[in-house]
Length: 372
Image (tube, rainbow, N blue to C red; front, side, top):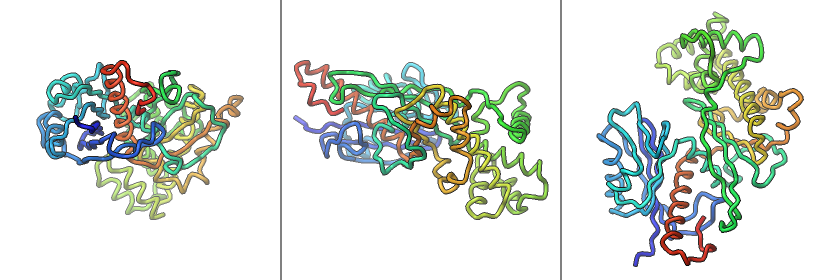
């Protein structure tokens, strides 16, 4: 009888799919508090557009792995998930159906989750060294946790602790995705009001603007565009030329490079405005959930600007909540520096599912043997 306990985790984007096959019996078990339990058996990335459907990608990965047979799999996918199914709008013909994959791949349990939910579960695997503390706060065990992450868009999710005496830790956190990034943007000063109106015109919106339009990579690009329009002659001509020569989705990189090179004052101002609005939104989330378990800031943008945070208005805007400010100041705030946190979250869920399968198959099994 095999002593292997294979689980498959995947992080599925619009362009590439990244997979890792783990053997939970192949390395040190370190529990839900860490991300490195078990051993990596095989990992690889695949370009999605080479395949007619997602099943073919997974089949090729499993073949490349030596035809290993995972018992469970979890895929974190960039898209809205409903009933364990997600449709990838930017890849024609791609519908990822967890139950269909169970049958076609002969995997006992396959779960499809939103990519930001994967990040939320990945928080449970973090080491202290994988975070930068922005606010120490006063953490409370088993309190809610939230994750906010600006990148291409603005993701937000929250984690709630479920008490369970049969669990080795007395319970576990579950992640709940939200669409908080699409709530209304609230401008806090005259310049921000002008920025709001500028971006509304960009998107042909006459009534409202979502916070994601401002707090995201696209928001940085739009803010720079606004500033060079409002303050003609103050930008570096070379930066502006480069900015205008690339597609919209590449413009945040131009701004970031200009900030790093210290070549354009308007790029610096755009990032400062972004950090101001980002901090304000993090504070808004703090008021909604009172997450004394911690606020974790993920996504690819904030780690680029860690050196600017001490002199930025990020925390000031976060804490500036009137008579509620003292409550926000007591909440721990950390920046996640690991770029593969979503994949680690998918692994954690795959391991949980394996644990549930083993319990259902062997009703007499001692609960203390649970991996997670």
